[in-house]
Length: 332
Image (cartoon, rainbow, N blue to C red; front, side, top):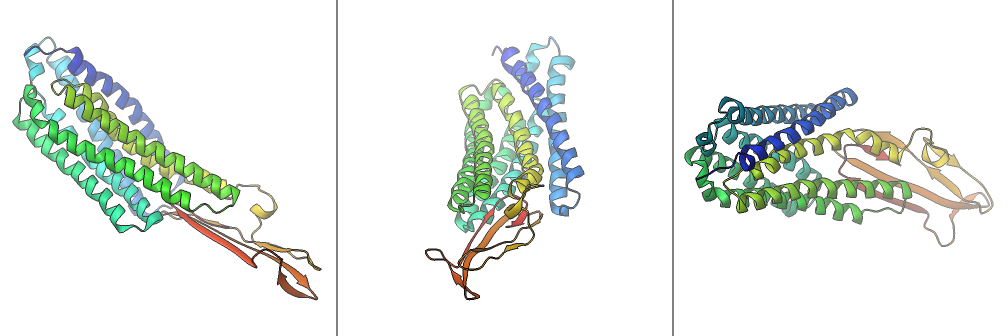
């Protein structure tokens, strides 16, 4: 069988260059995370360290794969019909990254929904993605590259599960966040921002996974699919790091520094008499590593003969709360 260098390791080389660029972004985001969030829990710190290590090893394996063919076996066309051990093993590192990230987002879905079945479906899809990645690796060692068409079903089901999990995560977060709009402009704007972020990250990785499935299904004997597959793991890692590093900016959307009157008084109280409203607004901001909890409590009362009385047409106390999946805790 005639194999084209352009469609095999030419495509892989393009994927390697793009992956190296995204890895540079990973290094920057990892540095910013450890510099800006030293008080995070050990679990989060270890998760970031493990993701960075897996991403590093994955890039090294991809580099070895391309170097082995384009340099060590330069002008050796028969070698194009074989696969290197590094090309086979790199699949599992992408799978490990995928299951860690999908479990991270599954926990976020659980925080906002408390839906056991929805969270369970996402976790099952993540496990299928990882398990079939191992099956693909084993099959790659047992199969010559020209017979990779026998593994199309493995990739289709495995990465199809990953795409389904990613899109389900994005849609679920958007749905439950939209249900928790409070009527407070600043927090509703924050929720809108989180919804856009959830859709962008979920659908980006989902679309890349679909591209891998399509290109491998149509062209299983070249490496066009590899270029997309190598990008998938980098997008997973950067999506988590971006979520963790965005916490401070999200917190400032709720409680910006230097904001005036009702937005930054802790606590603030204004009292007037003779049917003039009494408005009390409490603002307290604290960061945790699990979720963003935003609650609002305001009261609107009038005073008649020195006794408080609810204003006509308005409840004596208005309160609302929303829990959104970002590692901040804010009470307004």
